[in-house]
Length: 576
Image (cartoon, rainbow, N blue to C red; front, side, top):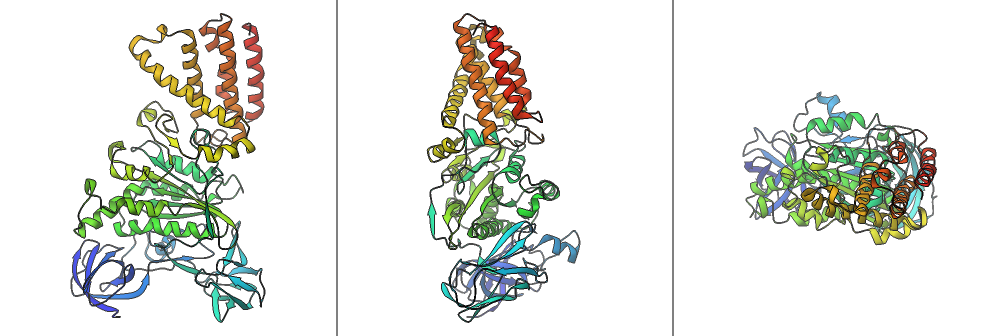
């Protein structure tokens, strides 16, 4: 197989070469500057390559060399706290070499080759081991990093294993004559193997009331957050990264504006992890591929991030992967597809758009790993439809795949209601699977309370149409009380301040107490109506305002108990 060829044609990031006879998805080096690219189409002697860097100045006749290997991610100690570009080049390392502007043709390994890690073996010489089994451990910051047998080594006998300080390239074990270092390499487009996949049945607890109560996502599931510009996709994803009970976070900034990625890069190291008290970056991997970076690298970035997430899943961790946003990824595919002169599908996107989205989201799973642990990857993909049009192809194809839909609403943003998740258009398909967990771990009537709240909100939506036509004064008292209760659910429960030290995170037991108090108010209000109390007196019970303020109090749980007593006392004064 020839490894040397020449450039025949250049069309932006798409380069045609002859004379290299590669396989599909082989990585090649293009031009005199050895720009990195990947073979995406082969027609006879012509190899079509998508180049991950700017091709300005590259011309036909320049050399092309084939590495014979696919695009791989380097996996091992040192991934956490790292900031990479779309093809896993560490941006801080590139900055040291070149300053603030990255030149073309510069490579840097994904993992530090100089740093030594303290390896502690848990198997001994003579032991039989299998693919995925843990050989030993390394402390990666505050995380226990399991060094596993590479999946390519199906099984074998450990003839030698060492303890001590090693770099990621130095062998720490010998299995059937094969030296095994701490670092693995894995093709990013190939899912890592697991022993068995399971139906997700445990919720990813986020601390956001509208998500945990109304539209929960299961660990190992996939959700989409579509919304127009300014509706709070990035803030919501950052809240999920900070407060969700995932143990590892992989955040992919895929084609987002530079200033948004700058916020993430500067804020994440300063955010305190509520679980450990250390920096949130200690359990985070950031992949930054901004909108001014080459589109081909943007297309690769989601696969790089997913492969890193699968590696930590294989250790038995729960991983949350944030992709912000898959619309920019789809736009990169559209641009490359048009340069390949492929037949366009709807709105110019390639015909294989749905297939690529499926490949990505289907890698989310709850699984028994090869090491015998249970791990999960939960994918939260932001979608940025142009003009907030949810009928466009990326949103519609995503909704056919994911089982949770968190719809961000521009009208809620205009009303200053955050998070701007619309409770009438959002949905989750995990309700039945998660109901048992909520009953066992929160309260037996938690699913019933949620169903009650949704009925009230839907009833409010119906009544609002009547109110807009004839005014609220014409409604009977029972319906006026329904509107008041719905207002409490919206303003007290569903609204949440992402920047408030107390309200930013709401544990499940507190969510239950808050919803129970609103239900208590509703029941007492109905009883008061039955005894002839006016709606005005019911609406202006002082405990209602106190409940609204309770979620911001430092001693919030004690305050909620006091509100419950106030409700009893104040409705008793009304004769209930």
